Amino acid sequence: MKTITQADLRSLLLPDGCRKYTPPEGAYVTPEARDYLALRGIALDESEESQGEAAAMPVVPIEDRGDSTFVHAETGERFRRKPEHLTHLSGRRLVSKESPRIAFRGRIDSLEAEVLEAQVLADSLGETWYREALGEVLSCLRNILAAEVTEKPLAPPELFGLDAEELHRQSHDIQGSFGIAHPVPHYRMGPLALRLNTLRTGIREGELMAVKVFAPGGHAEREDIILAMNRLSSALYWLFCRLVSGSA
Image (cartoon, rainbow, N blue to C red; front, side, top):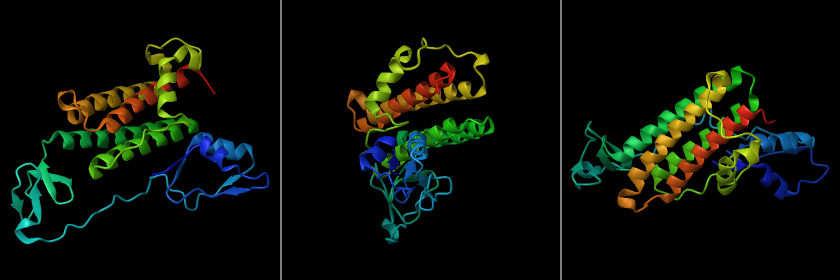
């Protein structure tokens, strides 16, 4: 899913007389990009925009090859039907449901569910900006999962108008970014702040799982996925600190 940021809109050099902007089909428009359009009096045409709420998961049909319709990715054993103790790695390739990659996919699935619940909480509290920012986190998780399943490369994530390196820098310089020391979570910070903190810990666990799965023996096979998980952890801490500091 393509993300449209404020920087993207600025690079388009929209003319002064522009009154409506239509994003590419399936694109996600970040909160900062929306604010940029609103400040310029440009309406966002969302007729073609999709933020994933009602998106259907793609289904790839498996060609019937008789007794060779499915193949075990590790042993080469072939099957007419998928055994219940195995699951799809990709296409017709099967692995055990105990496979580390399948466990990682399950962790991403759980994180997506937790982000959706956090969006509901933010919405109930009238925190529209955080609801939409969490939508960016959700899109990033879905991109990670898609890249892992399809075995395609994953670009470094860009969240809240920040590229991967700037997000890393700001999340490590909280004093410079938000004018506060690194905060210690406390119940008085409120439900949304603590939910963001919980998400941060869950994503951190997912990052450690990614290291075990994709960097066995210290050799990184999917450094792109590990980087994305690390930056997501930084992103949730950034959101937590932004909320706690009272930054606009």
